[in-house]
Length: 117
Length: 113
Image (cartoon, rainbow over all chains, first blue to last red):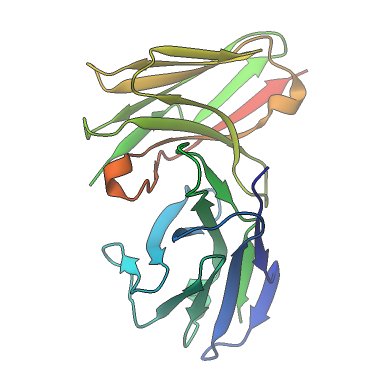
């Protein structure tokens, strides 16, 4: 089956620093990937749609200059949290759809737990 | 944008009983409705999904029903087992909108042994 990986699985950083999270589709290509944020005991909130070769599309209320997204290839999207603050501590999850299939199914990465101290 | 509401927020059932979770959506253009099970600290796991051209789908103990007219869909779990305890999310999506998912708020299901 289709597999999506994320790296790192956990990261702790100091306030004011930047953190990069990678999302890879291992056995399929994806022109579109999605980034979600999930706070404890809450649902997944879509942050942005990552588009290969073009600018990401951000959801309302998400600061594009704070959450930088780069989708440089058909298998890799990165999310950089810039000038991180404690309120950015969350579980970040990416997903992708196998564009070669007609299925609507999305495959989720295992998530990245970010803690900002 | 699409708004998905999910009820109840918590559900406690006796092992062997059935569990039902209901969701409503706002955008009639939505045409794909997946259900996910998420355990603490893990990725959401697709357990069943349904397209808008189908009214019901079943996979062993799990079934989903869709009422397009009323814009609501439900998850049914029969013969619940302790390992069914988790958080369940419904979602809605449409192909015309990059297939992006709008999630419900989630239901914490506890199966009492």
